[in-house]
Amino acid sequence: MNALNVREVDKLEVTVLVDNYTDVLLLQSTEVVKRSGTPPPNLPLAEHGLACLLKVKAGSEEHVVLMDAGVSPTCLFHNADVLKIDLSKVESVVLSHGHYDHFGALVEFLNNAPKGIPLILHPDAFYERRLNVPRIGVAGLPTLDEIALKKTGVTLRKAREASLLVSNLILVSGEVERVTDFEKGFPWAEAKIDDKWVVDPFHDDQGVAVKVKNKGLVVISGCSHAGIINTVKYLQKVARTNKVHAVLGGFHLTGPIFEPIVGPTIQEMKRIGPDFVVPMHCTGWKAINQFAQEMPEQFLLNSVGTTYVFQ
Image (tube, rainbow, N blue to C red; front, side):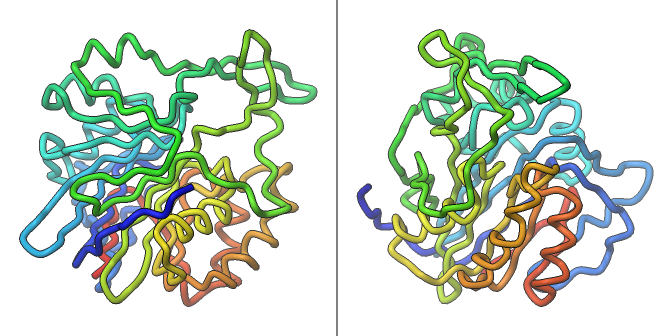
């Protein structure tokens, strides 16, 4: 791992285009939290997926990057429409990992994007995948289609290492180092590697970070199959900064197999000490509520359409 020179931004806006939860009565905004306030009947939709639009500003420079694309084109495009977001301004796309609830609308988005737009992803994102749930059985998952992606005219940038986007203002982690003793992955998730179904190592799971001037690092995760604490610590290491301003995204703590690590995750998050914590998507109801109880000053409840402003 080589540390990278991440440029500071004056302002970062993260708009949640797709997430599992929507609450149109969350109307009160602050300097950091901007609720959409869209009036009926044009309300944002929720689905089991995630997509975030990142807008960074540094001096006179402005750049827009899409992280993940949710499950369905219906949700992604509808929400962009009601939120009055022009997706044609997206300059690059980052895929956090190769699960359908993050790439589901990707081909349709790219078909409507400028030809040659870069898509940054890990090469393992193309693995065949499935769930193998005890006492329930095997359920196949959609596979990311490389041929379909190439037909859109996208520029595929496959990378295992950390990399920088848009004039070195956005950091993509690449493969995340595993350093905690409690974040052990997802035992029900399997990938087909060398023609054998094995427990998915999720080497393709990656996060994104932006260094906000005088505030610190803002970390955005997709599902954190590598572990949200591992992800934050690795991005701190690559960006060469200890101060974390905010952590947003899916922490994958939902369900009985992850309940035992909710407590250790929150304790480590407290040690990291972000100013804001915004659990989304696959974090799960119990874990989200525990974050709210144990980190009440830092916790922010997400709803589809919310924009978080860090400056």
